[in-house]
Image 1 (cartoon, helix red, strand yellow):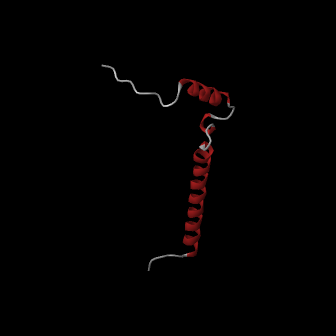
Image 2 (tube, one colour):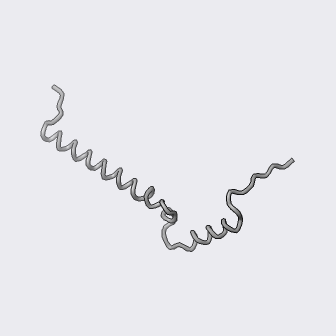
Image 3 (cartoon, helix red, strand yellow):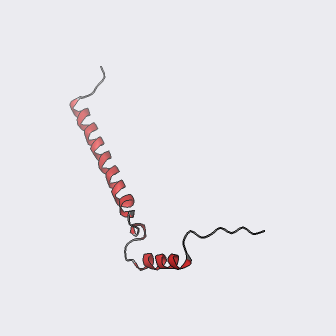
Length: 69
């Protein structure tokens, strides 16, 4: 008794997708449609936010803002 699962994509379409992605000259992690957002955009946004928060903390410490008495 052998149970087989149907494939997600037809074989011909899978080969066509593979050929498309292998022919691209971009880096592997940027080949998809929205991969640039997740690989570049989100890390840049997190880095910018953390730099802003560090800068605000340094400013507040140097001016004595937000101290508990």
